[in-house]
Structure formats: C-alpha cells, structure tokens
Amino acid sequence: MATGRRYRVASVVGVAAIAALAVRLGSDPAVQSLVAHLPVLGRLPVDPAAGAELLFETATTLAVVIAAFLPLYVPRPRRSLDTVALAGQRVLLSTVALAAVGYFDYTYRLPRFTLVVTAGLLFVLAPSWFLFLRRTPDAAADRAVVVGDDPGAIEATVRAADVPVIGYVSPPGPVPGAVGAALPDGGVPEGASRANRAPGRGRGEPPDELDGLACLGGLSRLGEVFVEHDVDAAVLAFSRPDRAEFFGALEACHAHGVVAKAHRDHADTVLTHGPAAGPLVDIDLEPWDSLDRLTKRAFDVAVAAAALVALAPVMLVVALAIRLEDGGPVLYSHERTAAFGGTFPVRKFRSMAVDAETGGARLSEEDAGGVDPRVTRVGRVIRRTHLDELPQLWSVLRGEMSVVGPRPERPELDTDMERAAPDWRRRWFVRPGLTGLAQVEGATAFDPEEKLRYDVGYIRHRSLRFDLRILLRQLWRVATDVRELLIDLGR
Image (cartoon, rainbow, N blue to C red; front, side, top):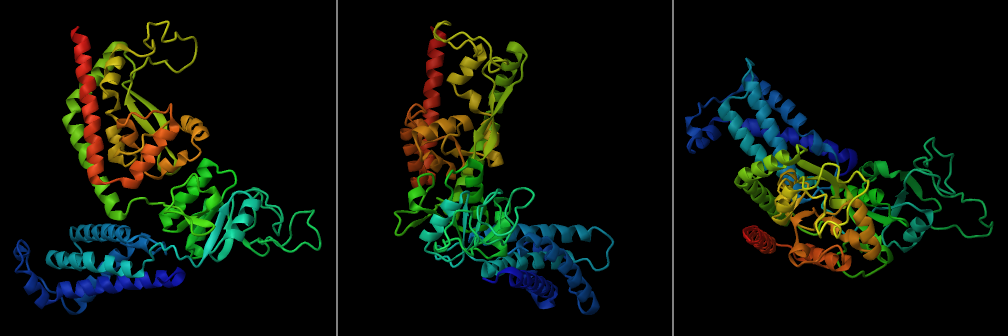
C-alpha cells in the first residue's frame, strides 16, 4: 500500500482517471448503442458528446467526483468491505450531485444517459481502485508504537516487544526523563526523547529501553500518529487502565485498522485471538468478520423495524396509561455502557414514581408487603411483561444496541462487576443487546463470573442461527410472563 503523500497523490489521480474514463466511455456512441438494449435504459435519449463539449462535461464530472471522494484520500488502513461500502457511498453522492447539476440551466451538464452509464462504471471501478490501494490489518507488523500511561509499564512493554517500536504515546502529564521542558498543559513535547532520565539515575547505569525513543504525542492525537507514522501495530502498556483512555486507544486502533497488542500478563481485560506464542498477544478488536457484522446489522434493523411497526399500538396504550396514572413523563432515560467502554442513553417506559431516585426516606419492600413502593401500578404490569423495554428498539435502529448481545449495565454497576470478575471488560468488545445468552440462561448480576462466561461464549460462537435461537427463547419467556400475569389478574 502507498502511504502518506504518495497515497494521497495516487488516490486523487486514480479517482480523476477513473472519472474521466467513465465519462469517455459513457459518451461513446458504440457504448451507448450497446447499453441502449438494456431494459429501461433504452427509453432514455441517446446523446453522445464529442470535442469541446465532451471536454467540458469531463471537467464538470471531475470536479464533482474528486470533491465527493475527499474522505477516502486520507491514508487510513481499512478492511475490504468497509472500503467498498465507503467508496460506494461516495459514488452515490457524486451521482446525486451530478444529477442535481442537470436541473440547472448549465450547458455542459451530463445527459441522463451518459450519467447512468458513468455512474455504473464508477460503482465498479472506484471501489476496485481503493481496494488496490488499501492496507488490511496484518499481524506481521513492521512499525509499532507503545500506548500507555506509565513510564515503567511502557519501558517493560518495549523490552518485551517482538516488533520494531518507533515511539510511544502517553496521556498529558510529566514524564520523568523526557528531554525538553514540559508543555503548558503538562504534556511532553512531541518528538522528545527519553535520553535524560529523572534524578537518581547512576552515572554508570546502562541506558534503559526508552533511551532515544520519541514521544509521538498524547492520546488525544493517537489517530493522527497512526496516519503520520504509518503505524502497523499499537502495543498497550497501561498500568492503571483508565476506562476512557484504554478503550479510546482500542477504538482508535479499530477505526484505523491498526493491529492492537497487549502484554500477555495484562490481557485479562481484552479479547484475544488465542494463546500467546510470545510475550505479546493480539487483541481481537473485531470478534466477527465483515460478513457477520453485515448480516447481524441487517438482522437488527429488520427485527427492530418490524417490532416497532407491529407494536406501535401497544406502545401508544402503554404511554397513555403512564401519562394518565400520575401525569409524569412517559420515558425514563439513564446511561448504560456501550461498545468499547463508552456510554449511551437507554430509554425505557417509566415504571417508577417521578421522584423515585431523588433520595429521601423510602419504605423497604418488606415493609410494603414485598412490593417496592416506588413502582407504579402501571409499572408493575409493564415490568412483568417486559413492555418497559420496547423504547430500546429505537436504540437498535440507531446502531447503539443490537437485538442480541451482552446486556448493558450502568457504568457504576460495571465498576462493581469488575471487582468480582476482573476480566469483565471483555464483554464490551461488541454492541450491547436487548437480550442475550446470559439472560435466557437465567444468569444475573449476582454472579458476575457466570454472566460474563455466557456473554463471552456468545461473542465467540455468534451466528445468525444462534441469534434467532436466543431471540425465540426470549420471546417464549415473555409469552410465559404475560400468561402468568393474566392468570394472576383472573384470580
């Protein structure tokens, strides 16, 4: 793969050449005569261009197409399906823009027949060109950076690294021994080496592993470091893995197609490809391949959209019942943990009193006859029938959740879970779900290790058939709960 400036030049020149070729072929009388035999296209008027007219039409197309492909000129490693999808989106955008130009009284706009043929050629040639230029993530890394929060951990990781390390990236803050004065924000000047160590180092002490190793910047510009230095791999060296910094680094690796590695002694909180053959292990940033992710997303959208349409009357009735009971808001929102340790708002139908979580004296469930007094009458019904969860279907459509996956927890509860199950973060490598294997198997937060075992088992063995089985089991549980409620109401 060409990198840096060469990649930018090659991508722009390639797009320009492809666009020019597409217009030339789309305007060729022989090509138009051949394409005119296709269904529907034969109804469009054939209007081949030549000479100055063709030259100006080509210039117009080049300006639009080159501008539309701007995001793809960044030398960012991408996976095959992602490259094809992004290039296809850019072709569609340029086609719409060229069609829009046709609505204006512009002399050198592309005729409709030429535009259709040109767009078809671009849909084939443009993704192929960027597939040729791209680099797929490869475990055989030639250029690596160490990403960490502690000089000792970074030094130990560099010593154990089995790949060439070109520098390190760390959060802003004083780094002992860095050459040059600290930046105003407390960070380390980019490019500063570690040749001069902190006071206390003996004169005869041999230089450590960080001597001469450059600080490439802070975590906030990790993506820029990946691109500027053509990085193949990032080795994590966090001694105190702050949630935001740790998963922010992993997310940057995922977004840029950079291989993420960790020391095998500190790999408890990540998914790995398998047993470590050396001191470093590859972090499994994408437990599922591109086709699996595509089919899962299609499954999520289809199920969520169908459920929202089918259950719209039920949701309307629930919303009216909540509103009529106490006049409070219909929905209740709170933060839950998302993929890669982020957070997102989860919305449910409100099942508790408006001021249920504002503090103050509360009756215990035992004092209230085994019933939480904060839960409303409507709330008891929608909780038992799981109707309070229906607004989360919108989160599935938005891509924040999946239909099936590890059930998201509150961030503060996740902290408690990590104390009981140190490798709890492994379940954060995929989107959370409305339901999951742990839920249908009856595992609860009272046993975090069991719940984690089911969640990681699902991630490892996920398939469309597996998702269907879990969904059907969850629907059966919902039907059983509804039947039991009806029986209780009939007594």
